[in-house]
Length: 316
Image (cartoon, rainbow, N blue to C red; front, side, top):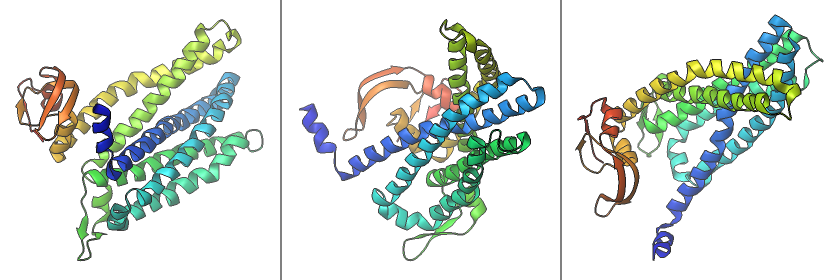
């Protein structure tokens, strides 16, 4: 019976959402790593130039190969994702194309071309160009990843908290103020949250592998490399992890302010609730507007969203 119910729910809209969610979830793994990794490689090469310690250069040469693969996968999966705007959400793309199209074009013109121009030097220029030129190439690619994230998240944030546009008589969206479109209410929080997440992801991945090298008896010759990786990663994590908690909290409060129904839906809250509980598991019953088989922790959601045990969270 449950299987029949699930199959009945899989209409074209639901399937399109599932497909797009899978592609987005698959894609974000690569930018989340490559953005932070590019910046870390820049710091790594800078330390090599300043100290002359060959260990920094050896660690750089190891990780730049991984960066090339991750960056390439991010580009390929991103192209598939952009195509799905036209295949899965053609009407939305038609209506919002006057706003979203230029934002994505800005990303290509200001970031992708920048990355593509210097990526070859970064990957294949070691020993073929001067040390300073190679460092400039690495730093430029890192800056390009940050700019790329800027435009993509500006477009994403506009879809969450749109402003700076008008709806024409033909039903299409037309921009009226590009600064308002780009710097919409949720953009600063979303951009800071994503960039911090990228740095934190890099810190934990690099630090984890560095710790493995230090502990493994099979890689004794790489312990000096592991020490560099773990040391730099932990310094980054010490600063970035607390910042991510604070930024995430502010981002959540911003979402509660501008998209209260979205927050209520995510938390499974149907009616206004004081001291709202954190629902760890629930099966929503939309027809009766209630949850079945709830597993929840009292007061936690209210504390997170209102910073008060008896704060009120609006229902959906």
